[in-house]
Length: 141
Picture 1 (tube, one colour):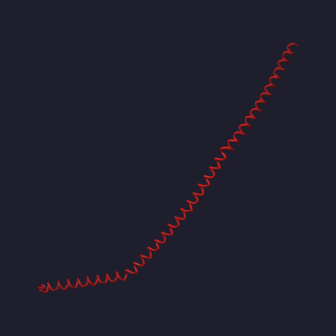
Picture 2 (cartoon, one colour):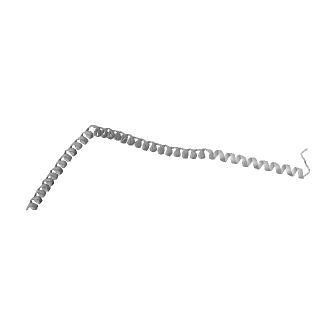
């Protein structure tokens, strides 16, 4: 029976060591949980002290940038519209000016063309008359 007593003693020792290991594992788990909670609390404190104010400043800056970009966009659209209106007015004015110049210049152009035709006609008559005088033997001297 001495062998069974030794086996029982060894089994008892192994059970006690297993129980001790289980208690150590539970203790490590509890300690890890406490460390985790402490780290989470530290992270929350850092976030409250540093990240939240920085995010508030960043959001304020982004709001300002958004307002400025909206203003710039509105002004660009306004300038674009003003340029288109001005170009339309310039085109309309140029068309009116062209029509006005044509209407005013038509009688003058007609008069100048008529005068030119008359001068050319009389110049041709004079050349014919000079040519007929030289062919008839009269040289004009």
